[in-house]
Image (cartoon, rainbow, N blue to C red):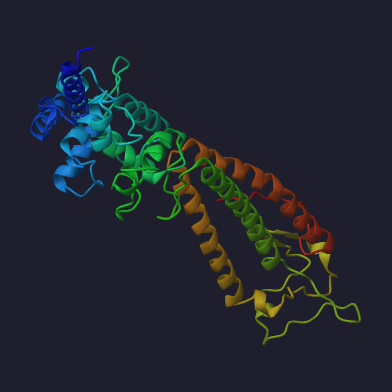
Length: 388
């Protein structure tokens, strides 16, 4: 080999090496990348890369360096999401296979594709109604993505509200590294969880207000526990109604009393209990709790109801009124739960009322039979029913 050609060969190799290692060719500089990004987001503004561009336009430090650089933003669309779009030609030709370009201006790691985000939004909003679902409308069967919806923003809000959803795996992956972990798409901005929507027809779903602002199940476990709590509340309500009936029986009883000689007591004019009209053999007593026939006392004696002092005067009124307020509170609370029209919550209340009624019926029957046996109620045993 001619030694004179050696310098030329070395020079040629160095020139080739320099050309290969040029970070970005003139076809993809900042100006061209910015223009390409404008074209891409004008054609399809719902792409996740366009959401990043919007964040960087509002605040150049919204993402850690260099992810707000124009070339990096173009990469968020053209590297793995939409490389066949016309605005990606320069980037694909110059930077996609260029290791130096990818090192200096990396595309955002784990950024979900447009099709993935659209699919997850559709899945979430089909299962339940949440704030943000209405912004993207309904995805037609032939469409793979939403054209007029900031999908990544909506997707992040849905997942921040319920991060445990299976549809949020792509969001969690993006938020686990740069640049997502420090972006507003992953960090709660303090505006609070989105409020569940009010649907006035029967529907399924998890996110529902249950009586209180803070009682909003946001995953399957919380929803199941809420159903169990409502079931128990409905059972307790039915048992409380049975207690009300038993209390009414007790307060309304009329007990003929005798002294030690077997003679019926004479009325005490100072006793409220004895201020009631006497019961005579020819005039039986009737009340909503039973019947005292004339044969219940000797013909020569007058019969009077002897009751504890707390069961007369204002005592029964206060007890009944307090119990009624508690029962009204529970009944209206259960009614409001059923008015969410959530199928699971509705049947939790209905089944709880049914089970509670079955459990409470023997209590009422047993109390009534005990009073009949003791003589507090005489006559036919009534078929007491707990009512609202």
